[in-house]
Image (cartoon, rainbow, N blue to C red; front, side, top):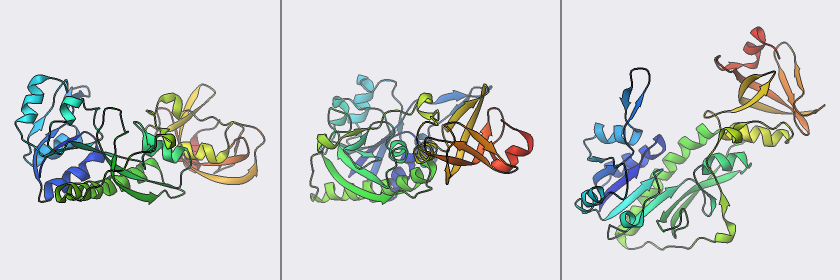
Length: 299
């Protein structure tokens, strides 16, 4: 089949790579506009565009997805299907263009965790299992009928960075299988049960601020769910500290936010137990182990 791929971040690249190496014909890639970053305002490409440029694939970068010029350019590619991974919301006049329509890869077991940050919220909420879903695009975001789901466990120490990379590879395999099902005419679409839906809104700075009044397990899950980026943090004596790695303890807490230190250990009280801080970063400084931090800093 002729495929146009829509995507932007690193998460989308493994899927783009597998499609490009498959028997399908990748006729174009749609991604965000280039950015200018740094003091020299150096132009940077999205990871998806960088892959496309490196592999001589046509790239479209519309400012508006409803631009008639863009839609005309898309239609002239005569694609059989559009594949979407981590991209903007497509208007109906775009996702209905190909004969086989468009399908999206979502980083959760839909209908759970509909929204912008499904991987993060699965970890934050203490889930032990997640997965990916390929589904046909519909008017309402993340609600379309499903082609395929693949499950994976979430390890007790796994962070966003760890799980993100594993799920990107799992998602790439799911996309290839979905394309095969559609091409062969064996695809069966299953409706989502809206009563089981759970939101996964965008991660904000407020999301990342640690609330020590929660249980140690809940605080640890938050830290895992936003590591390595943007990172969970707390404020102490007007200083901001990011926490990247922790360990649960069985030491009963003397109070939420109570900090106890030894020569090489940092313990902070939560609603039930103390949480041991293993890796920390003071604002403006580098990331350190607790032992390294305590050689030069104190609370």
